View (tube, rainbow, N blue to C red):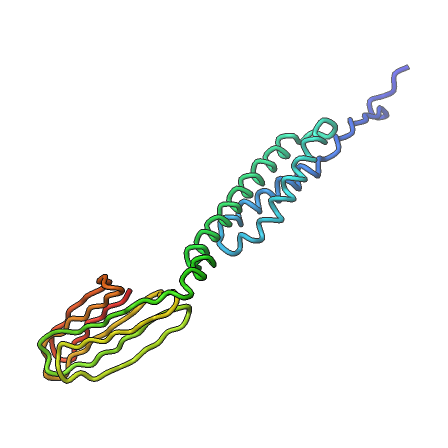
Length: 205
């Protein structure tokens, strides 16, 4: 005999187990990709995207039993994209560092080299002052002279790798014009002209 409707029991089908590996891989991949675009902070993205790839891969393998394959695949894709961005940041930083730092072989090759730096100031100024600087091997040397007659010339011999030089010429209160010029081993590197009272011509390279 059939039971009354009030006494019948309905058993719902058990819910499939959640694919926690896929969920974790998706979350980590999303966080890793988001932080990978931020300079310096992007360092945090490395462990996130690596874990996202691992957990996303486990989520794909587990998807046959628990489902959630789409979420796991998305986690792998996001983590892979974040990893690519992290690798690109490393390449950019390395390139900038190599451009800013002379190779060790170059430093050794210039260790005994001598460069002749010539500072010159010409013009119509009755009086002027000169400040000249050389940069070599991470060190700098600066000197200042008062000039009572133009043209003016100063030669400096630099031993080692010459990384730069500077010369500024300033006219006196009487005005006039000054032109500065820097040459290295006979090759002109920089020139500039200024006119007027206390005017400054600056040459730097």
